[in-house]
Image (cartoon, rainbow, N blue to C red; front, top):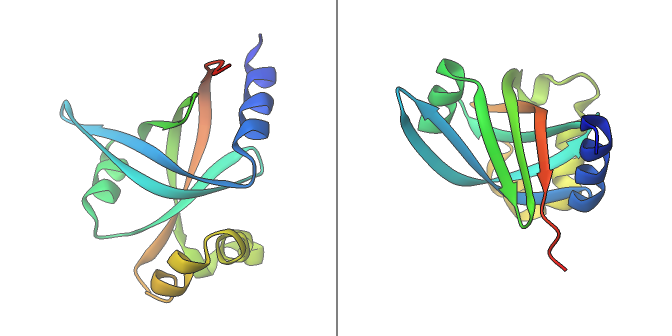
Length: 128
């Protein structure tokens, strides 16, 4: 299966949103945590506080891995700035729609930034 077909299948399996495990690393110190993700424009988006440890890791090393169920992704993370400054505020609308509890609790903090992950590798394990 070629990369584009794999990515299309990956996003089909993921649907509109998922809680995914995010692995990042700086100086060979790997950490993993869950992040609330929404998917559009063939990218994975999540928000985080710009002061959090994971954010500092992503700024130093943008290479990440993400996983949900049988879907594994490797990608490049990019800081897109404050959530409220995104053109069209697509993330904000989708996050509010799919992840209301988190949106209501955290989206009004002015240190929340939007992270975009562009997949460079996708692997899908057949769970059947």
